[in-house]
Length: 100
Image (tube, rainbow, N blue to C red; front, side, top):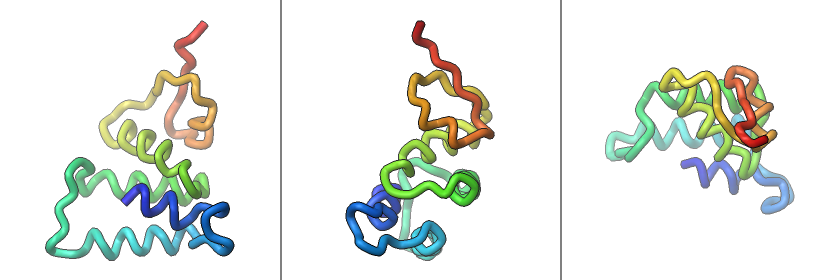
């Protein structure tokens, strides 16, 4: 699911990439399939991810950072130790660089 979003919305892969809302709609359609079983993320995760994507306008491979942020928030972690400044696009999740 995340890789689909990363590829479908990536402007360097498609000349006219899918808009985030279009890709999210496709993910919703797949999640509604009665034969689908997801291996990790529960139903409460998806609204958190969608809210982060809509607020930060994530496209392409940045969906993987959004996934990490959404999983943290979904499970009550509000601070992420990381040296990756890309997480600043998710203000609901505080970041702290653990490196000197």
